[in-house]
Image 1 (cartoon, rainbow, N blue to C red):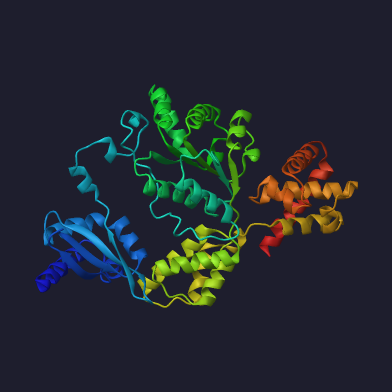
Image 2 (cartoon, rainbow, N blue to C red; image 1 turned 180 degrees about the vertical axis):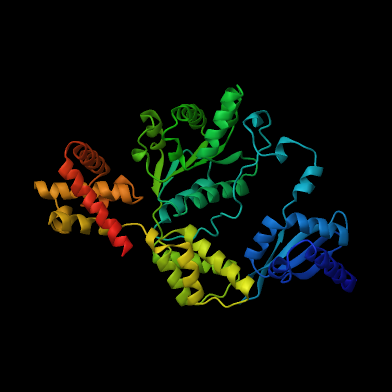
Length: 471
């Protein structure tokens, strides 16, 4: 029987080869190995060399696989993958394939099978949470830069009905893991409380839905839908800075959820105090729970993240390559993942080992040296040299005119050229508070408008940044 099943798989491969290019077939289908076929469940299990290959097949070829297997095995065949998660220890895990579009089309058309709409409030038991199931606490690696937000997030996920830390406001620069963390909280809640209505939505999508509802005269349905959520997760909330109508609508949704003990989680690239352009009544609500900062990961955390992903993908990457990637990815988790995915693809397509030369080639394409952001130290050093003062003086409490000017210009340029918050900038420049940074930035801007020589000095410092980066 096994021989005939393997023959069916060989027939399936032949059909697949007729529908993809030779390179695609050799890269993604040739490494697949027939594992087993469970007659009772009508489930075909295929062994794939890594989670990366599994995810790529699911994203790009699941419909083709489904059609071919229905022809070569049986009409109601189900597909599962045995994924190699650790080549060194020969560890595998079995994952069921997601239903294809054709499979879903044959099911009865209900709201449960469609993208959530504001009009779904009438059927509260049917809601797609829009969470990414791959972003969990298991693969959110803990480090000094994320220890507190991760611990609080896990506590919230295990006790979502508690009023403690509600709302939770997470902020930090791009690539530090904010989206992963809020997804992990939502996924964990759904695991522990399956009946809970959890919804992840980007601020941009929320705004698009709001505009559409307004045009269709369905704004009340839109509000009622969001007021029916048990756990609302909104990402990139800074997108609403110039959207007063969206802000006002969210204010009423927020108030309703908060008064009824529902959980609210928000993520932004800056803390509430720096969301200038949003009404005070909304900012005070954002700040009334817990505000948690996610910093960019340091080198050690980058190494830990890389090694975790390498183990999951079943790769063999030397330590010197791992260290090189960690040093050059600018502390961005997205850059780290992008480099590893590219290394994996190159290794599979060109059948080559992953070494430092290949890593340098990938990193030079993915993480440009010219794009490396300026640091506070870069800015402070340049400003101090221009105004002929010492860095120690800028960090001190001195109120001498030339030192105050240097301090204010440093803060202004740090806010302009880094993604740090005002609170973080103040902490790094003499342990000032965020209000001092905001005042300094406003002072520099106002003076530049009326003092041309001063404006020329600031622009001269900025030009020195550009010259330094071009060398």
